Amino acid sequence: MGEQQPTLFSMDFNRSIKVEARPERLTADAGVLLQREVIERLGIVDWLAQRIDDPRNQDLITHPMEELIQTSLLLLAQGWRDQDDADTLRDDPAMRLGVSTRSGLSPLESPTRIDGVPTTKNPPEPEGLASQPTLSRLLRLLSEDANKPVVREALFECAARRILASRRHHRMRYLTIDVDSIPVEVHGRQPGSAYNGYYHATVYHPLVCSIGQTGDLLDMWLREGNVHTADGAMGAIVPLIDRVEKRLCQVASIRFDAGFPEDELLCALETRGTGYVARIRNNKVLDRMAVPFLKRPVGRRPAEPRTWFYEMTYRAKSWSTERRVVLVVQERPGELLLHHFWLLTNWPPEQMSPEDLLGLYRQRGTAEGYYGELLGVLRPALSSSPRPKSHYRGQEPICTYPSGDSFAINEVILLLNALAYNVVHASRVLLENRTHKGWSLESFRQAVLRVPARIVLHARRAVVVVTESSARFWRSLWSALASFRYVET
Image 1: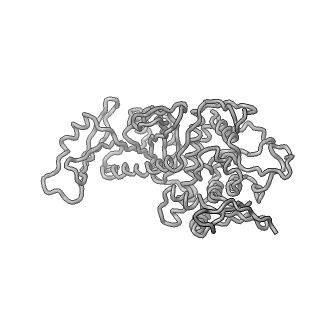
Image 2: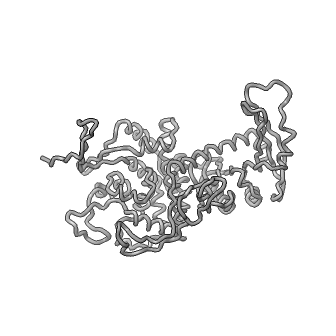
Image 3: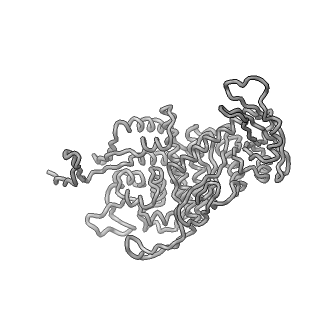
C-alpha cells in the first residue's frame, strides 16, 4: 500500500476542500507536443541546427543544439518569455518530451551520464530542460556573425516550408509582401534603444516584412529606437523579393506605409518591374492639388457614404521622376467635410484601377493585425544589456563568460520570437482550415496549447490524458496534420 500523501492545507471557506501534493506527472502545457509535431513536419529546427557553427565538444554536452533551439521556441510559443522560466519548467513532463531528441520514455528518465561523465548520484537526478545560463550562452552563440544570418534565414525558410507544405509544394501565382516598422518597448538601458517621439516610449524600431495573404513573417531587422521608418529598407526589401519569387511565387508586389516611399527604393522596385502601392503623406503641394476635388456634387446626399478617385501624376522634391498618384476622396458618416488621402503606385491604370488599388492597400490592416499579435501575445522581451554577472544563485560565479554584443543578442531574441510566431501560426492556420473558424493567436494558445494534462506511463508508452473539451480541437488539428509535411525537393 502506497504512502499516504500529506495534506498541504484546507480551504477556510470550505473545509471539504483539501490540497495535496502528489508525485504525478502533470502539466499545464500539453500543447508543446503538438507544436513539436509541427516543427518536425516542417523540419525547421534540424535545418537550423545543421547550419549553426557550434564550437562545443559534442562528446561533452548534455543538450544538443536541436534541443536548445526547441527549448527556446517552445517556451516562447507557450508564453514563457523569460529564460528563467526554463528552470521553473525544468521537470515539466510535456516540456521534456517535446524538447528532447531522444526516443521512447528516456526524456522522462534519469540520465546515466551528465556532461559526458558517469553520474555519481544514486539515484541520479532527472536531466530536465536546459538551464537559464545554458540558454543565455545559446543566445550569445546565435548572435555571432557566422550564426545570426542563419537564424534570420530560418525565419524565411519556416514561412516558405509552411506555405509550400499547405499547397502540396506548388508556388503561388501572386503574392504581396507587407513592409512596416513596429515599436518594441524596452525598460532599461539596452544598447540602441532610444526614446521615440512618435510612440512616446523608449523602444527599438525594427523593420518587419510579412506575407499579406498568409500572415507568415519573412524577415526582421532590429534597428535603433530613433531611426527613420525607411532606414535600411533598401537593403532588406530587394533581396527579399528575389528570394520570394524564387521559392514562393511567380510575381511578388510590395505594400508599405507613408514612411517608406524614398526615391532610391522606388527606383529599385521600378527597375526590376516590381509593383508597389503606398500611401504618401499630405503636404502643401498635394493639398493644393486636392482642393478642386474636395466638393460634393450637386444633389441630395445618399444614405451610403461615397468614394471618388482622381488620377494624377506627382513628383516630390527628392524624387527623380514623376509618378502615378491617386487621390481618394471619401464621405464619412456624421462628418461635414470630405476626407482625402493619396496613394502612390507604379502600376498603370489599365493594369490596376483606382478601386482595385484602394482595395489592395486596405488589406494592410490584416498584416498590421498579425504584427499586433506578435507584440501583444508573444510580447518579445528584449532585455540583454552589457553588464557582467556578479552573482549566481547568491554566490559569485565560478567562471565568467564574455557578455557578447547585446544589440545582436536582442536581435536574435526578436528573430526567435518571430520564428516561434510562425510555428504557432502554422498550427493556427491548420486548425482554421479544418474547423472553418477564425482563431486569434491568443485564443488558440489558451484553448489548444496551454492545455492541462496528466501523463501516464504504461507498457513503455506515455499516455497523455487531456480533457474532452481540449480533445476535440486536438482531433481536428491532428487530422489536418495528416497531409501536412514539407518534403525536400
